[in-house]
Amino acid sequence: MALIDDTYFKGDISLSQNIYGTINDFLNNYEDMILDKLLGYDLKKNFLDGLEIVSPLQKWLDLRDGKTYTVTDRDNRTVNVKWNGLINAEKKSLLSYFIYYYYSIENQSFQSQTGDIIMMNENSNITPISQINGKLIRAYNRGCELYGKNLSIMTGRNAIIRSKRWQQTLNLEQLQIDYYQEILKGTAYNFIYFANEDVADTYPNWNFTEIKKINTFGI
Image 1: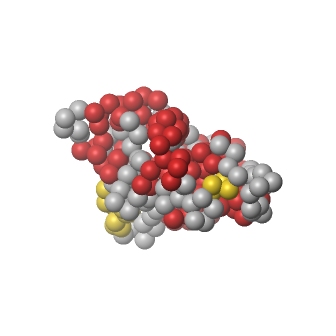
Image 2: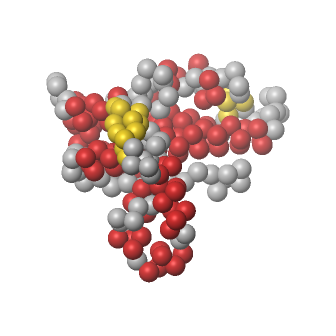
Image 3: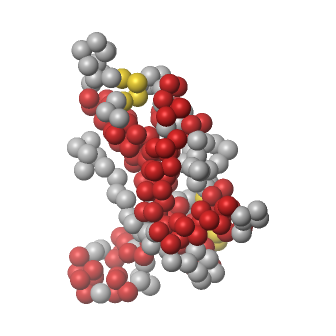
């Protein structure tokens, strides 16, 4: 059973009402794909199985529902960061942004600002492809923002940064600035990363796959 439902598709990612009865299989399939990239197969399975028991462990609820945690900023101050969870009362989830994008692409139809499907045929009102592409790209990139970036290539503590190859190709001073800017964001990656920093293996066997934003050329 999917974590999100049709109530997450509203506003800029609203879907036509007449497709909600057919989207459940799509939600399950694409949620599984996204969670596989975010968590890796082993952690994804542990997470989903953990939610099925009568009293789930708090760590699985935190990953699903969100949590406020702390980080240390570049001035050595303790700062609160809020992870909003994969599901939440605001109905804003990285899952819904990605799924909206993939659903629209796979079904060869696009959503208007009012939620109606724009079919690209001679009897339909044609919307400029640039407008359609822009809407889909914004949704996908918003999903990327909530998904997060791999901090392990931004910190001096990581072995990859100490390698000669990376030292020669990266501006390490800028890297540190980017790191301290990035950790203040309440992304899925950051939440899991700092949970494991606080208590090792809170989320064991984590295997993160980076997802990059796309531009107007679809790359």
